[in-house]
Image (cartoon, rainbow, N blue to C red; front, side, top):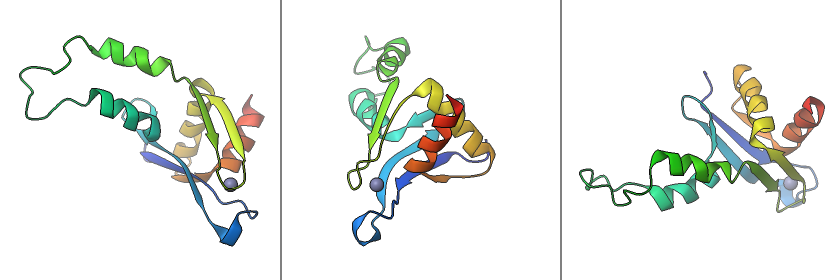
Amino acid sequence: MTVEQIVVVCDEPSHARSKIADIETFAWDGSRWKPTRVEQVAGYLFSPSPKNTAQPSHPAMSQGDYDGMEEDVDQLHYKCKLCRLDLDVRKSVLFPVLDRIAEAGVSHTTLKALIRVISKST
Ligand SMILES: [Zn+2]
């Protein structure tokens, strides 16, 4: 994947003073997309201390538990605070769309463009 990050913004003309709203940043981790706003929460909960690698601080939290947690947020919801444009989408629908965007060499898109593509692909 040549594009390893896709930034989604909303730049609708109805925004006051042509403001651009940050919606989400998806990062490619080598095998799949990760919504970084969700991952920030997970990182807070699960980040291992680099100075304490010998003893994991949460030995009960295996990678399997981590994956299980992630399944719970399969449904993603985004809403622009400025124009109320919103998108409800499952990762299983959204991620193939991100694949196609990345394959086209695009690393920046808008909420409206995503909505348009997803409505065509479902
Ligand atoms: Zn907007």
